[in-house]
Length: 272
Ligand code: AMP
Image (cartoon, rainbow, N blue to C red):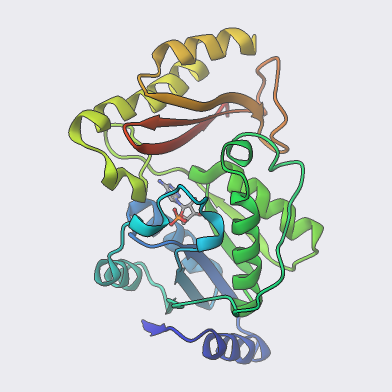
């Protein structure tokens, strides 16, 4: 595995490889990699000739009071994880935006609720950085985790609307043995917080398995199980367009964002 920091050099190599007919696979991350990230690399590996992983903690997607300054980092561990998962090129740009960077990508509709409502500007930052990275890396396939379910829907919508010739592959959510969704932010949790955090997955599973169809009842059940300090949202939505649902069917997806101590956690589950 090689590592590049310079966006111009990465872009030039990607264009050369495309011109030679190679297919490029891409997995963007913010680093502090865990088994969830590794599963994305492993899913992407057989889908391309050249696999690029990126690590960039994107300031545009953090709100002014969020954890940009203390986001966990582990450059050596990340490089080892990427190398053993079959990444060919680890791209770690110190900076991605020109000082007079002027373009933002705004994806409407699917960003109005859920994390879009709780974190104003977040998905604009995500769509902007992913479009910027896609322009450099020139992937024909890119893998995103269902852990950040709304993000996956937003990227699919952006790629469709802007006719980007890129296949977006969604990867299943990877959990710890106790059911906690793996997240770089789990590093912030104390032992007590971590035990309480398990209530997110417990609530989602109970909602899916209760057999009730009426979403109001399903949500009431979920709320009664959540053991958290604050709920940003607990919703049952259509898995494709994220519109709220009144009745559960096979296209339903439950999403939750909640705070345990000072840590904001997200999780989600599908009905099929
Ligand atoms: P992040 O580093 O948090 O920006 O995540 C980079 C990519 O890894 C995103 O596509 C995430 O959805 C994905 N990801 C993070 N955690 C998990 C997980 N537990 N299971 C599957 N994918 C994940």
